Amino acid sequence: MAREEQRKLRELNKALPKILRKKIKAYPFKKKDFMIWYSKKDLFFDLLITVNVTADGHCFCTSRETVKPLWLDDLLWDFLKMEDNKKEPLSLRAVGAFTVTGSEIFACSQELKDWDVWELEKCVGDYLDHFYHSVQTSAVDDFIRNIKSKRYHSELREALTYVHDHKYPEALNCLKDQGDGVFKNGEIFINNAIREFCEEKLG
Image 1: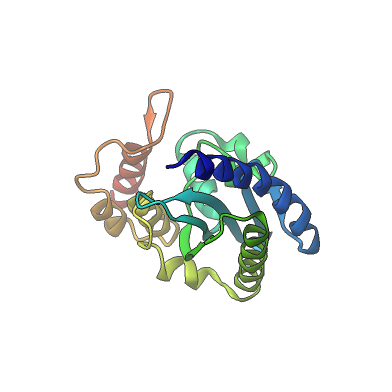
Image 2 (image 1 turned 135 degrees about the horizontal axis):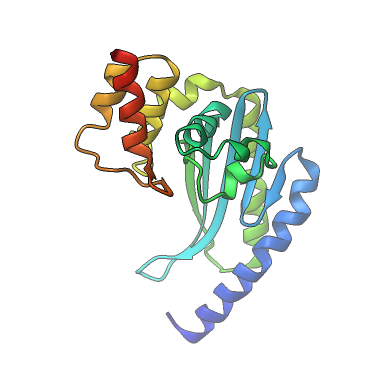
């Protein structure tokens, strides 16, 4: 990356948080660190907007929206004996280390051809508009339909959903060959805790 492009990228990354703080005032969304989030009834939505440069030197503004039911993190915390997390602010579900990534319902990349802050501002506005539409129109069915849309936490999303629906054989099958799992609290590994629970339910 040329020195001038590096300078422009720094300017864009510096401008992005300021643009987000200004523009989300027109929406009911909240912002915590790098995440924009919103909770509606039993659903939790989050939006991540970033600026990055590809290997061939093109600059893009990218957006990723996810949705998850609130019970997804609740179940995770129950299994890990971290029930007190349920009392924490909802923003924990967006940025907390012990949270399950939701199902991806939208992803987009728009090129910033001139590496310009004005381009970035317009792009952010488009993404916020789309997120607002998603929040208004999405339901738990969108979480289920897109549960495998993103590899990260895919098996855990499925297993916890099966547990929620009392489908214990399916939950066990989902975790087959998946090891201990990505979360551990003390001596408790998440996948092992789910397996033990399901096996107990099945007798």
